[in-house]
Length: 139
Image (cartoon, rainbow, N blue to C red; front, side, top):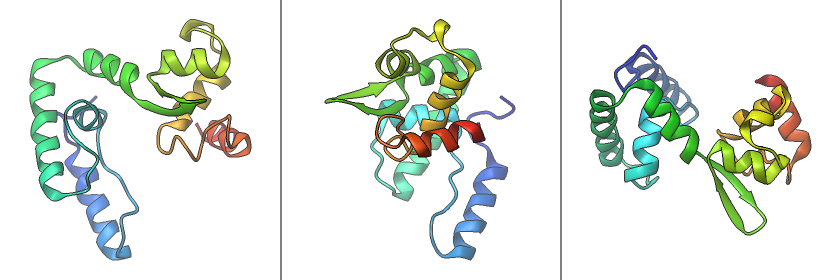
């Protein structure tokens, strides 16, 4: 909550790490940047998209509160597939995976949902319960 849409320290750190390792290992996108990408842009890994994402993130931060941004993100974030359907948002994932609304989740179930975010297909409790448990415990 201490930035204006971009976390320049993380961006520079991730860039240095990626250059040193000669591959992309670190992400540095804020929730606001992820929201901008999710709502307005593709996931195409180009410099042009990243710059556009940064401008949109700054614009979102100037128009919305942090709470509004987080609420939009929490309702939109991609959390994998359940059967034939994509799950977007914590509420939908809670219902699909645990048969509960958000208020009925245990701490472990909420941590499981949070753990899915970086790689929904790799950390899916339905597809990879062992990975999901390790990730949940990390959270």
